[in-house]
Image 1 (cartoon, rainbow, N blue to C red):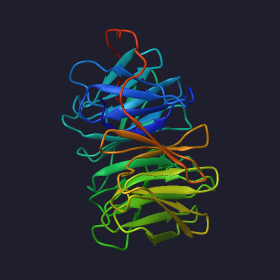
Image 2: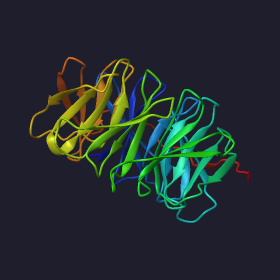
Image 3: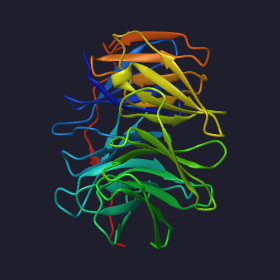
Image 4: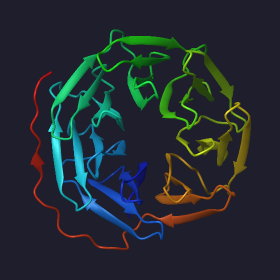
Length: 305
């Protein structure tokens, strides 16, 4: 049985998820068929995203590298030059490259689909975690221990947005359909919102507990609150709705599927599907469809900036 952690919608319409305790990435189809793909010895995927090349890209802090998993199960890796850099959040940029944070090394990096790597050193330590791209082509980084959101241009220029609450611990970041940047504040039990004009707003959660996962749907932003067994829905004006789930359900990371449903992971080894009308289905993360033997991993080319 897999232990789902991060979750993302793939280019194939299926939902993909990392596993906390095994060198695997899982896939669940809209009809709830589950398969897994071996990442090779020593790999441990963390966050993941659909790449520009019909593949799943993921951070691998255990191997200090960025990984690529093809839809056919082939794997390839880009090693990072800074030891124990702590690769964390990752996003597919509109420039056709992958952008990711290095939590321990205080950096944001860009890697091309062919493996060319460029790193940007952040001027102030802050533990970069989640990352999202704005409509302006700039990237927004949650500085987990720096208590701020950083805006990074593609040429490395940085602008800071400091949060009001001390110890807010921003973590997950997403861009809404309207173009605003929304993020979780785990320590402050709030959700933040940064608009194009630089205005920062923070909302106390209607459900009690720290927010964990965040995703943007067509009209709303959705936030999970595992301690409250709830999913919160934010409208563009900041108003909230709360969906209270069964006491056995603790939604963690979440993504919006191409089928219009929300898919989420749980610490008990279950995957959840939540429809916009509030219907919840659960699926144990047990492989139901076998995949072929993985090919030998290949290392992508890497060059300095």
